Image (cartoon, rainbow, N blue to C red; front, side):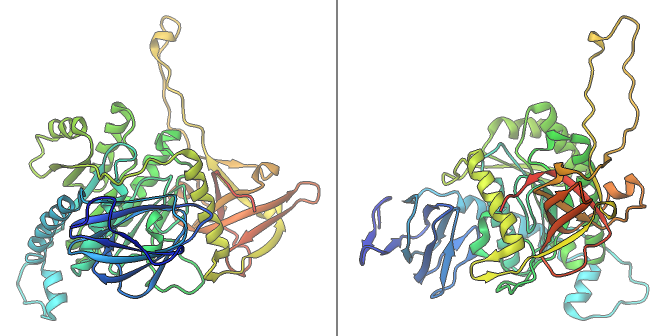
Length: 467
């Protein structure tokens, strides 16, 4: 048996091999300007629940990952790593047990949902037989920042897909992305494997270029910044619209219905704001399983909070020892890389972005309304009362030089739609504002495909990209 940190054999100065014993993992970090090539020579290995094939070479850039093996494997790698080590202490057995508990709930739902049974067996409906629908587990994964919530969500999604299920994965953390760009909340059905080379961010957003993994088509709503606290009312609004889209998919797709939903929540903030968001998410998505990661107090607080709910299960799992805390510099670097990939593709599959010039007058841009500041009655003059009124979630923006270098979300909304309708619109795609010429009243915009600039509504967030 290899001891942690041992088992390395060097063929030469560039190519290295590692032998992993059963139920151990190799953790490694790759810099933003480096590429590491990895090949599985023998045995079985996986990254976040997605199995690596024997033979093919996988390429990783700007990644903090771990390769786990259940029965042992041999790995060959080439390149420059920022850090790497072997550990035989892993939370994977606990995560696998959680998966099997969820799979039991899916099996129960599959056995009682008449639409699913007919679809799988090819049987026809029996006249007079009552129709029954059953839903699989709706799982909310929560915990503090850097606790491994997203990693666990990927593992549970990958394992469910491997069992032939089609779970709907939901990302409510706008600073990262699920098959989309940063600043979004999104959901997608995972009936096929994930792209292990893009595991750092769930996978790339859909592109017009070739893809070696079957593409997933997410439903996306644009929030526009990293943290929900930047605008709680707007965050709750887009989250609610996403939950309605997920509910609509579940209603018409029996396989997705019994497979359930796996929700990756944003990091818990302070108890007041964070717990209020948990209540909102649980209500919007009809959550019946809450998984807390790496926080004993959070688990006990939620156990008490939902003790009257007989249909709610609150469980806890430990934080993986391989979780790496990332700083703001790394986050921004990752986000900029995603913006670049959206328009220009990857080195192995480059894309040709298209530049179009249009009149400023033909460009309609909105942004989030400023979050209302709550004023305590104790600081008001005696006899005054706090008043509140419904405020619009969006405000129209004058197209000016302030838009330069902005990433804008192209919405499924027309300029003559109401602000409420625009706020509820999902994302069609993204554009990059290259230049604003206020003198000539012209705007130069970068698009991922060659096309006329759609006469839709564009939503501005806090993200910028400079080439």
